[in-house]
Structures are given as C-alpha cells and as structure tokens.
Image (cartoon, rainbow, N blue to C red; front, side, top):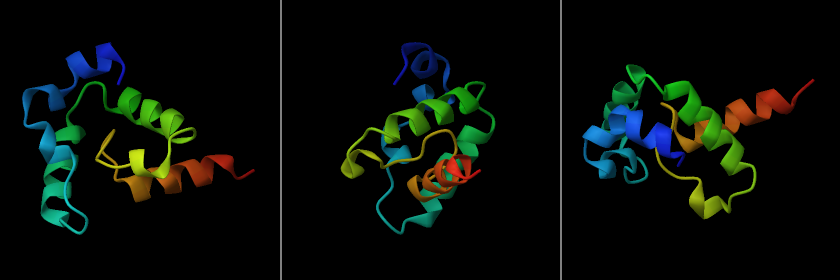
Length: 83
C-alpha cells in the first residue's frame, strides 16, 4: 500500500484484521466499510487497489480496500472496461 495512504487512512488507527474478514462474515465487512466511509484517502485507496488487482494473483485480491469488497472492486473494474 502507498505509504501516504497507509499513514493517512483511518484503517491505520484500528485493528487491521478487521479489513480481512472471513468469507461470509458480513458483519465484519460492514464494520470495515463503515470505517472507510469517513476516510480522507478512501478514493485513493480504492484506485490503488483497482490498479494492483489488475496484476495481482487472485489470492491477493482479498480484504476491504477503499470501502469495497473484492467482489465490489471486480464489478467496478468490469464496468470501467466496458465502452
């Protein structure tokens, strides 16, 4: 993660495990996404995640980043590729 994003993100002030919930743990996902909602670097974090996921192995596309789950980020990337 970009150092500036990591230092300025609200996620730096809470347990990082919160952003890596177990599959199907919607409560933790909602909690992490709620934290991202008020983050000043949310959009930059999301853009970085989308850029990295284009080249990352599927196993590295986990966790809440920029307020989005991996599935939500995949949807954003798919929509961006469409004309």
